[in-house]
Image (cartoon, rainbow, N blue to C red; front, side, top):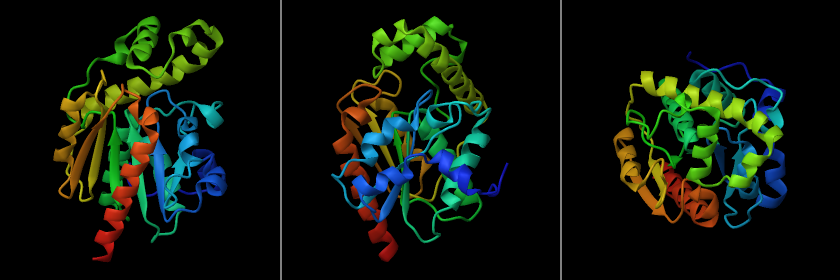
Length: 268
């Protein structure tokens, strides 16, 4: 699937449910940061970011994927192309000359990488920087075949990675809602990883990792260097797989630095 999907206002609103909420508290920053979550995750993970006033030159836009959060009634995406189509619809709604950054964590890192590949292939404006967090570069082996795990093992693995208290497993109703989305996401990733043939991007890449990440440890983060022909930086921060939420202020500062470097390069 290539090209731009049809863009409808209500469709864009579904994919960016807190876009308007970000404006009063976070300010109308000159650079928008579109944020994609981890497998099974919701845009709500980035709601504190959208309300953070620490970096006034940024406007954080959480992107909601189908099957979770405000889109709970919708079926999860069946494949990576479907996810990317939705992100492209959001980007197509912005002014063509408005600078932006793409940020994706864990599964989201693959989503923003694939989105940027489609933008480049279509000759569309590219992000000032592609920021990938807590994920291995495309073409590298995953730590485990999560889609092959039983429900119990999959949930236990989620707790091991951090960010999910073990007590959550006791809430059966919650688990019944989370499991189908998590299962769909890890299956989507497994299928994507089998067929992906990585290519080099023409835009800068910033790769972030957690010092104690069991899924994408520091030794894997530098692998993103091979995905760009432009500027590359990487940084390892304290924390587990969900370090970016534990170190939100530091990550926002890195995003602001990327925004400044990108704007300076555009003005050169």
